[in-house]
Amino acid sequence: MKLISANWKMNITPSQTKEYILKFLPLIEDAKDREILLCVPYTSLCIASEMLKDTNVKLGAQNVYYEQKGAFTGEISVSMLKDLGVSYVIVGHSERRWIFGENDEVVNKKLVACLDGGLRPILCVGERLDEREAGLTYKVIETQMRIALSSLENYTDMIDIAYEPVWAIGSGNPATPEDAQAVHRFIKNVLEDLNKNYQGMTRVIYGGSVNVHNAGEFMKMPDVDGLLVGGASLDPKTFSQIVKSF
Ligand code: PGA
Image (cartoon, rainbow, N blue to C red):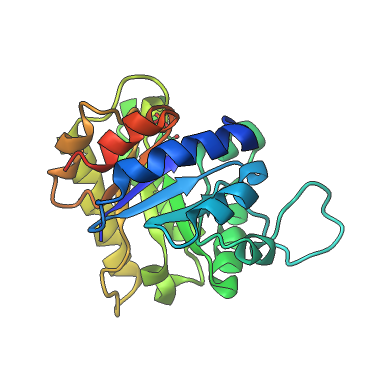
């Protein structure tokens, strides 16, 4: 099933979350043939979890720590998220990598923890503008994937991957659907190469300046299995239109 996910980032308070979900649910009630996901701030998980119970919308977190418990002030574990009814978590978002210094090794540990704990990770990969201009897009993505998935080669069916070119995020300058298609195909080739028993269960979704006008165009591409939407997911009506854009 295609996966259309919101990434609210550091936006929307718990009380605003309640208003958002009250408006959003009736708008997407009939969209049952696609998976709809809200990746909300930690502080909104509790209220969102209560409100999304028995609906067609799943709940995701935007980050997680890899240790199970202990003296890690400010961090949140896989079991804490699971206990709240969270089923997905974004791992290795470029804002985590470039603002908070997460490297591929940390991303790998987080993926291991998610799979151990039964949480489905959405691994984000993508090149910066300087890397793209130097013709390094494929090399960067393959390196990110190989390190992030090291020791997890046989479990690639249990994750999803978001291709998010860093230069496209929040810039109003998305990749073209054709460029995204080419990279998505490449990502699937790497997955097939990593896991000889690969069942093709990984959805490769596109993120970076997705909006109401371009969402349907991305979804026409054969290897675009969904979308990860930041800015345009902050309004429930707009996001519902993106959910129903294909
Ligand atoms: P954007 O963000 O849609 O605002 O570009 C996407 C993302 O970073 O997940």
